Image (cartoon, rainbow, N blue to C red; front, side):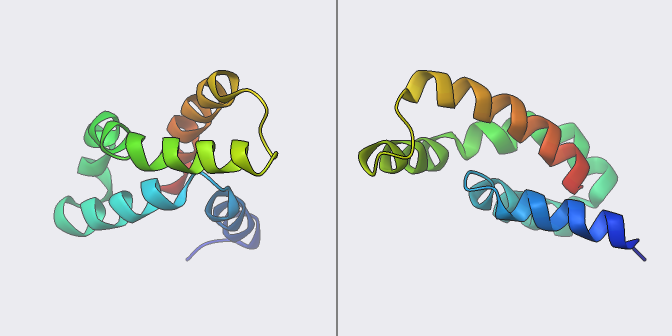
Length: 88
């Protein structure tokens, strides 16, 4: 059972614009392999979702929400890794 603080943390992760492709893969992987084993596959999950995340970043650039794709990409990758660990 999650505490209220943990539920809020998960909600915050789920609400980040770049996390849905990652979460989809983490959920599928955790069902197949379990949460603990899923930790060993974070790199492949992140790498597999890269194209979808980049499409999201580029679409946000087109709408003016992001000005520098390269900078946003670097920030997102670091955040994805940490958020994935917390999410699992």
